[in-house]
Image 1 (cartoon, rainbow, N blue to C red):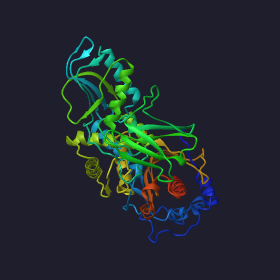
Image 2 (cartoon, helix red, strand yellow; image 1 turned 60 degrees about the horizontal axis):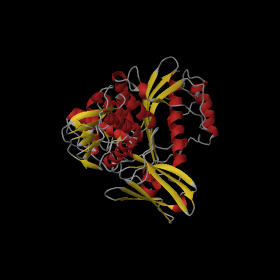
Image 3 (cartoon, one colour; image 1 turned 180 degrees about the vertical axis):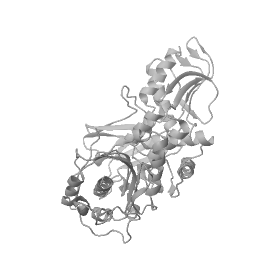
Image 4 (cartoon, rainbow, N blue to C red; image 1 turned 90 degrees about the horizontal axis):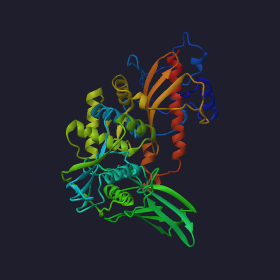
Length: 499
């Protein structure tokens, strides 16, 4: 059951947390106000903080923009700076999911194929074997193992020709956002052939005079080591990681003093076709199928399909994307949608432009300009009014609400509260000194609200170096205050809408 928060419990905790000071943050009044008139108001309304009070108490500096609509009528119930464009962060994925559902349909499945350019005779493929990516963002090592088993079941023990790998179904991008630190796993390469969300597992353990290092493509059932990614442990204080494009492989180094006794993390893969090809070669070899080293090609030769691995239906892929906020999935489904609508996709930015144009035409938006489908790029902008309007129209056309995760409401101490008259299904979004929340709030009595809240201290974000962007000083505390503000606003709307 979705957990919710009572207004009285929340505001008491909000004040106790030291965030209840009521100094104005902006000179202008909200564009629409829910403050009730004096006549007939009850004690609850008299003690209810205004949205301006809550914004000031949050002490976020920067800017706050929000808009809330009545789902039954589409009327704007409350807003503050509703046309101000701010980075949506991962809230953009809600728009991407709607774009993909519209263009591809909820039952669309991505496919990864094995093709043969010749016949199989006496256990030998008399031609080339092709691993052809179809853009599946969820393909993992276990899925590749299923393809290898299917190849063996076709009677193939070895091939006479080449082992080709093709990921040109979608354009290649080395990263989603070039402004992120090199080593963060949420910013991998993007391709038409992706494996393990284009991440490689790096693990270390102190032993003797050094460290035992492993780089592998682990999944639930398999853990094949890879050679296309290497790691060197270097005696230095900083930087923590370095990356070098070694042409044939991703070459990493790590600062020895940062490792401790043992640990592990996922690192981004920059050569996804080489990664998938090497892992498939290892898996096939373990099943008795001998393959030569993979060769990456841009143009896939025609051939006969020997095996196919399909993703779950798009609806399930999107549900998981919205739950775990996987950036790679967002970029893949967004570009696949653009390709389905326009016949081709040239780049991530062109596809994001196409989605922005679709949103403007489909929902009548005027303040939306996205640079990617995941929200990772800080240059994306959308106004809260436009995001709320989009969600309002999407609600009656698509079953997006069912794919959004429940957001537990918390008190000022960030503890989940169980007894509130509002439940929320929404998408969160977080970048350094940027926070967003947009979705739907169901109130006691059956009334439904649709809302979008964006907060951003862009000046403070702009001062961060690239190296500081993984865990900037003050970032966690700022994000906590933004989330408290978001939930305080929702609680305020719930009280007034039900009065």
